[in-house]
Image 1 (cartoon, rainbow, N blue to C red):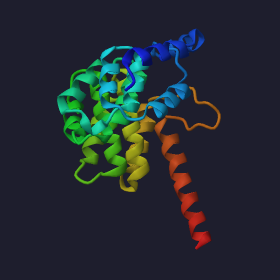
Image 2: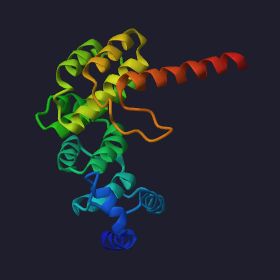
Image 3: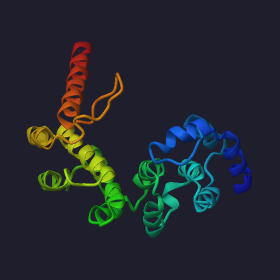
Length: 229
């Protein structure tokens, strides 16, 4: 059984001051290369007790590792709620929601609760879970109602909440053709993330561009499939 002290020592050895300086510009206070972190998680494999102890340290790199070695279904609803409220750095929040909460049997209950939360970071987790449902299990979602909320609130939302709402808007437009025109229209009028710097080869998060590119890819894939048939 690997101890917390052993893992923390290994994380300290992996830390690079230059990487930390870059990460801190994005709000993440750690200097561990994420590829090395994933390799360590692969070696440790699933260890729920270790994951809990790593999370309790409050250390960012340790918490990231915890999301990779935990057993998502082992957490109770209130545990996950407390963890999201305590995950204040962007990368920890992102990995916790995507690698743990989305796989939890409590995900839907938490999604509904978090959407209405006054804390914008917690609310952003609710929107991230909503985007997941828009993509994979939209039955029962009020998509026009979600568009109403996005249209009314996204422009004035704090950064992380705005990003999550923008992502949900994009996925509604990408996955649901009947709502695509309205989603694009909302994006064009609100102009959220229009000037966001995008690396070459990456898709802009500006919703009209994002939707257009992903739909183009869907059509290209479908056309290629028809040619093979």
